Image 1 (cartoon, one colour):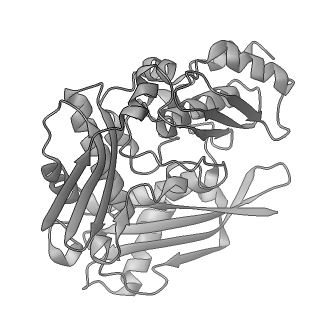
Image 2 (spheres, rainbow, N blue to C red; image 1 turned 90 degrees about the vertical axis):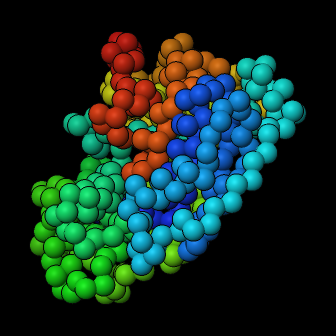
Length: 378
């Protein structure tokens, strides 16, 4: 029996707060100027948010107002809850003309490699994601739901989850061995009540009952207290949760963050295409799991390499899958942007609970519209 663990964070986690500000700024800019170039970075601490980086645009946007509104919507509305809206500084630069030359010629905005991954572990509901990261996201999303609905009114925005899943000899999830869940809370709630409520209304509400055993270990607020949270307790920075954003470590990551970047940055758009290809390969039944690496050179309009790994689960020769990928998918930066229509303000809904595996969010890289065509190869 093999055990694999992944984690997730809530929308109030300081790093994820910064990601949301960056993506909300990106959406606001693209809504006015679809051709804008944006690589927005955000840092946050107890009483300060800094917005900096590249924004080349004709749009007129109040960056500080977006930051304040984001913090408020997350739920940090008073200093005791981790508010950081007292001081916001904005430092914006335009894109280097050397980089712009490559992008304007329909090439990649930088060199880099991206990865996409899909597994049939959770194919029934259309997720096609590794179980540990999918379950971890369900927990953090549920924490937000019970807080916002008032079901557990003492819960505050900051929190983290971690799920360990055991796999059988066939590589299928067979048991959840451990759940770690830490949530910020009001000072008045007793630890015993919080632990009982979280187990009942969060853990057992969203995790599959058939995978929870009598000896599944629950670690709920292991230190006992978690009153001060968010940027008041720890600094935040965009791009520091890239494994949470992707596959929880089950699939590799090229190293480039997503949030705050417009689609000319292949760190983001290339990773979305890689996920789309991998998901359609698995949905078509060509393999049980698939990982794809695509690499780019600055200013070059097509990938310099494409690597496909099906981990021995392929149903047809891998070279046939590779040929089908080149025949059916345009992996050029220009082609990706056009195919997914990525110059729209759609990025705010990607930021929390992973960029992949979201069902019903109308994210084009999660479609399986190529699966039927690919399945004819079998």
